[in-house]
Amino acid sequence: MAGRRRGRGSNQQQQQAASQSQKGGPRRALREPAAFAKTTGYESDIPHEKLTIAQARRGTPAHRPVRVYADGIFDLFHSGHARALMQAKNVFPNTHLIVGVCSDELTHKFKGYTVMTEDERYDALRHCRYIDEVVRDAPWTLTTEFLQKHKIDFVAHDDIPYTSAGSEDVYKHIKEAGMFVATQRTEGISTSDLITRIVRDYDIYVRRNLQRGYTARELNVGFINEKKYRLQNQVDKMKETVRTVEEKSKHFVYRVEEKSQDLIHKWEEKSREFISNFLELFGPEGAWHVIQERSGRMLQALSPYSSPRGSPSSSPTRRRSVSPDSSPASASASPSSLSPPSSPSSPKRESRSCRKASSKRSAQ
Image (cartoon, rainbow, N blue to C red; front, side, top):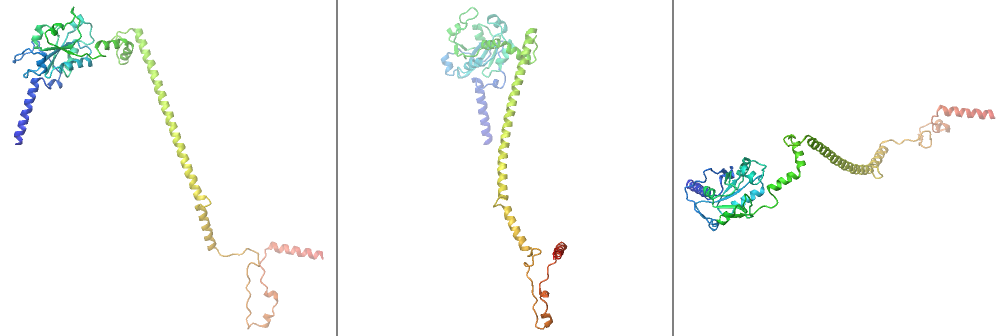
């Protein structure tokens, strides 16, 4: 069942693709360049019937697309050209767009010199997504033979009368035959406008191409003008260098200011933190004083009690208890023997006392 469904789906896709190719739907040229028209014209086994605009708008005939022709010079192919061709492609539901490009000989004769050669213009049109076929060396004025040769149903162009080759409107006979469909021009862009921009800013574009490696001979520029343009390029380079240095220096100064401000803020924060920590440690209620107090108490608890030197009254004396068995001789001992022993005096004090005694004797 699955295989049958796949087979049916693939057959349906093939039929849809075939019908789209016949109706002028999504063509192969969207992935490849458009084909050139044959010099012998359009050949088909299906008879080509003349259509009216009303029939073409209804989508008839069903067996073939409506063949619409648009011609032009298409020099410096731009968006205005592409929009006109898009309108010609979408003028009917099922359209095969044929675009004719005039040769250099006819263009130079009736309109003027072109920037691009005819081969470049042919190739540019082949890569436009709306075009199905390109006719090279198209005629300046459309003839009945040309229309029949390429089986053209309608001609698309803007409705403004195109005066050229001694005629007030080269599309007048097409309009009278009911084969003309009008498109809208895109304002603000044309080949003449592009050429005007280049001529107006001639010096800028000459300097641009000299910078890109073109020689003065290739640009048809004289020796003096070449040196002038090159000097202007050097001056512009110097200005750009100075401007770049100024911008970099401003950026550097700005970064230095930002860094200095950040450093100042960080230093202030660190200094506040350092001061608060110092006060917490060494302040009146700090941990250092608590440690000192505790260490002092511990030293007082651990050290023995000691009296200062040379103070006899500070140290208590112990009297010997008289035992009842002791003899009366010992009891009748002199009070001097019971007096506490004198503290040893230093030699300096002894010498001073001797000097005082000798001075008293001499005075008596």
